[in-house]
Amino acid sequence: MAEAGARRQSSRTIVTRFMTAALALALAGCSTVVPHGRGPERAVAPPPPPVAGPAPAPQTGLPVDVERHRVALLVPLTGPAAAVGRSIADAASLALVDTGGKALRITTYDTAPGAQLAAQKALAEGNGLILGPLLADDVRAVAPTAAAAGVPVIAFSNDSSVLGDDVWLLGFSPGQSIDRVVRYAKSRGLTRFAGLIPQGVYGRGAASTLIHTAEAAGGSVVAMQSFNRSPKSIADAVTSLSKQKFDAVLIADSGRIAVAAAPLLRKNGVAAKLLGTELWNAEPGLNAAPVMAGAWFASVDDTTFGQFATRYKARYDGRTPYRLASLGYDGVLLAARIASDWKMGAPFPVDRLADEGGFSGVDGAFRFSGGHVAERALAVHQVGAGGTVVSPAPTAF
Image 1 (spheres, rainbow, N blue to C red):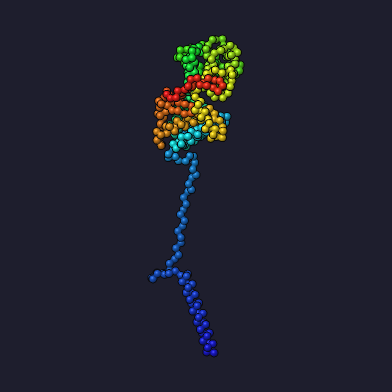
Image 2: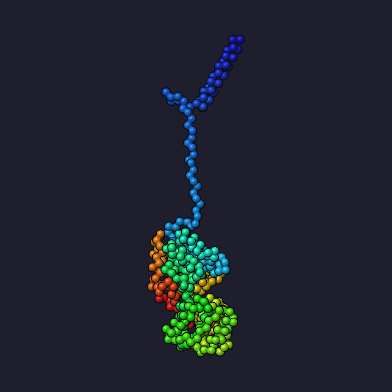
């Protein structure tokens, strides 16, 4: 009995010791150590998360540029002239690639919804130079807005009536073309000139240039008739003109009109040399018209344009550029050349446009030294199979 009691006492002692140890371990795991002389510490709550500030506003407009100048290209990208505008824009992009694209950022704005709206957006986005627009009315709409901002406009129009202190014209001037072909004709012994002139601003300018150049070159204008581009009006003008005798007749209109008028002139017994303007260079089928064989017109030399067209086709899936696409290319070349003297954040240095040495591009040499109209080095072309150049354009001024 004594052994049994002793065994029970020993078992209780072991259990008690085990429970005591377990309790001590549990307390040790759950208690906070209390430094000598201090009461138990309260649990410290974690710091609240930082209050988030307002989310950054989404970026609008163009990204910030610190090494490139912003140049706006204003052309129609929608509407009836969209194909021409897109061709100009593509040519400008090609020029940016060819120049390395390090100095300029070219952004294109559609003028079809409104040229003034396009200009306002371009100026709001920090553009310091405007290339374009294409149409004279669009230039008139853009010019006051650009002038108020002190931003120059190098337009693609050839209408000198839109000129202003802040507007330069890169388009092909009909006056220069007429002057060149008339002087060449005079150098070939033709002295008595006549004119078939369309009604309107273009026609009035062409008539004035014809008279002035013929007299300055030592010739004279002996007959002139205007027409409104209807078949009857053209026929009536030709009939009246044919009553006079002359050595050369200027058809101051498109190649399409010239192809319509030339048979009527020959039918009325006119054997005079046919002369044309820069508009004829935009008529791709002119050389294939037998009645136009031997005619002369002055325009830029197409040799470099042919090389440009090959690169354009290779880059843009075989598409053929419009003839006016060269304006976009040459406009970017001009801006890239001047960019080296254009300090970041400063206005475009318009005084550089008057460089006597001029500039060169797809359409040959040109300069603004005589005013705000691009003076171009022009060649005299002869219409016929393949077309030929009978008087090359100067390579420089």
